[in-house]
Amino acid sequence: MARGLRKACASARGYLAMETLVIMTILFVLLSLAYTIGAQGGRLYRIGEAEGELQQNIRIGFERLTRELRAARSVQSALATEITFTNGASESIRYWVEGGELRRSVGGVGFAAVAGCVDGLTFTYSGDGRLVTVTLASQPLEGRSFRLRGAVYIRAVAS
Image 1: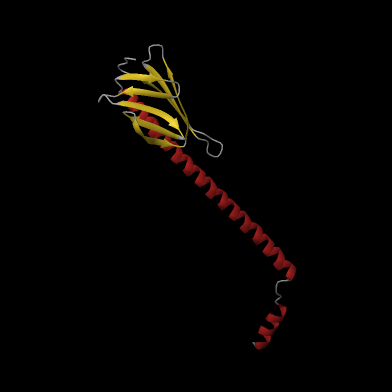
Image 2: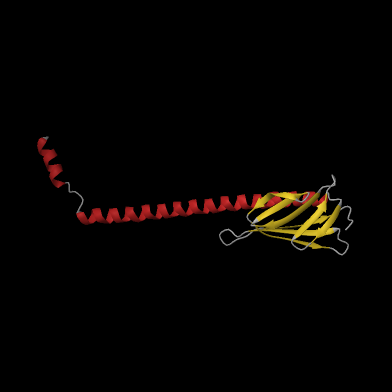
């Protein structure tokens, strides 16, 4: 039995240095590829998450502006990049963009930022001033920007 074991051990050969280098090279390439794919996936996930937050932020500001404008009693000042109107409680409300923020002021005292990362706000008005088209654009993120546009019919206009 001892003779058979010695014979088996003598005929078994180990890995050569060249075979070991080839296996290590292949393993290195596969691990590098897996790391690159994982890193790219993580980067795309972070970009997608940031875009989602940006879009939600713009939507919240847009929704608030259009909801209040829809319920306006009268429009006091209608410019291309800002609007001032009176709400049901006879408060003067103004919306405009400054410093990358959609800002809202009530009664002309101070302001509150309604949305951030805003690139532009434009208003277009129909002939009678009752139909207002609002466009709110986000600042670019990774070369892409987000734009919301909606038409608001103001119930009672006394400009």
